[in-house]
Length: 242
Image (cartoon, rainbow, N blue to C red):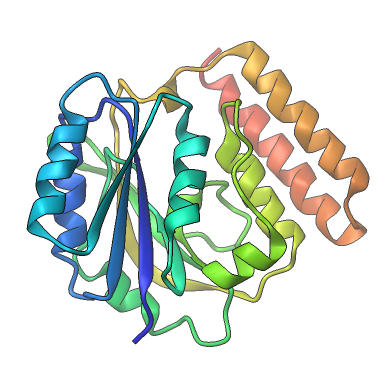
C-alpha cells in the first residue's frame, strides 16, 4: 500500500487546527504519515498538536522557531517518508474520502491535481473549483506529489518570502512531471480573514514578479507561456486588493 506524508505548517491556528487534524485522522485511507510543523506559535496550537500526537501514532509533531510557512513545509519534507506528499494548511480541512479517491490515480504519475471549494467559517460553501489545466492554480494544497520525484528534482519552497507557493509550483511545472487532473473536489479552503494570504504588500508582489521574470528569461520555450499566464493572472488577482 502506498503511503502519503501529509505536511501541515502551523502558526497561531488554535481556532482551526483541531478541525484540520480531525479531517486527516478520519480519512478512509489509513496509510498516512501526518507531520505537524509548529512554526513558533504563541497561542495553544502546539499543545493541541501534541495532544493529537499522543492519541494517534501516525502523527509526528515538529517544532521550530518562527521562520515562516516555507521553512515549516521544508522542515516537514525533510522528515517525510511516504510515497506521496500532500500539503494542508492548518485552517483548512479535507473531505474524509479525499486520499482514498486520489490514490487510485497515482500509477505512473508524478503529480495529481484535484479540486477545492472555498468555505465560510460557518460552513457555507462559497464556490467550488476544479482545474481544467494543470497550471490553473499556483497552490500546493490541491496536489499530490511523488516524494521521490520532488527529491530527484530538488524542489523545495524558497524561504524568506511571501508567495513561496507560487514559486514552488512554477518550479514543479518547469520539470515537466507526469501529471493528471482528477475530477474530484476534496479540499476545503476556509475563508479565514486572519490568514496571511489576505495581507498583501507591494514589496512582496515586486519580489515575486522579479523572481518570475527571471524564471521566464531562463526557462525553455515550452514553459514561457505558462509563466506569462501566471504573471498576468496574478496581476489581475492583486488588483482586487488595490
